[in-house]
Length: 75
Image (tube, rainbow, N blue to C red):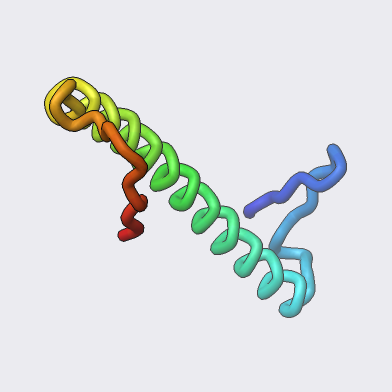
């Protein structure tokens, strides 16, 4: 027996209609995808912080400071 809690009420999933169980399955898939996306976002934020730190520490030198107006490059 599976249960789902909605608005603090527990429901027996075996007693839901076929359509209700289909909706529940889609809801669970969406929830799992959202958790994966949140994990990926956290990893990308951590990678960005590390890459910016590496850039600042190892590559943004005094010699690289622009002394005149230079057009920014977009990649």
